Length: 199
Image 1: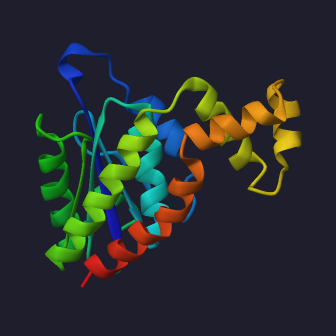
Image 2: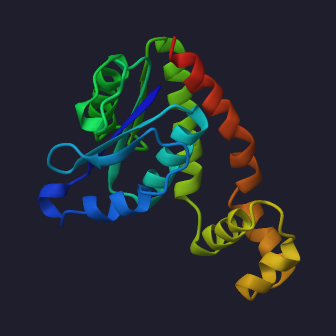
């Protein structure tokens, strides 16, 4: 199992953004226990699938202003109806991870903890790199990526260009500059490392 603990950065100087985040995460794919506020400006959820954990972490990091901790390990079963009432190693590891993610020295506020520490460190390194690349995307790059994803990878660049009101060449250039193909290819690697981090 994978527990994601997410904490708002600089919440004392900002408005409470938890309700907006919970709304964004409410339809998350493969969520076993939906995200909910735990204490203060922190939310937590449980997913059984590593690919879903990667997707959710990158979604949250895109919105900026959040620290993300992923705990990879077992949970005590049966899981209670609410994530915040759950117990087990994955919850403890997620707590440790989010505390590390909040460090000012981190280039991207994400950390992974697992029962297999070496695999967790590798998953964290690759996830950090992917998130850092995504953080440099332009608005145009994100628009092209979002349109590609909305078409579930089946739309042609010509169709995406029509939707965005730009040329096919512009779509191709935006996706290339966004390093989208590279991110899409490496996501399964992060997921595999997360799976192995569970021990």
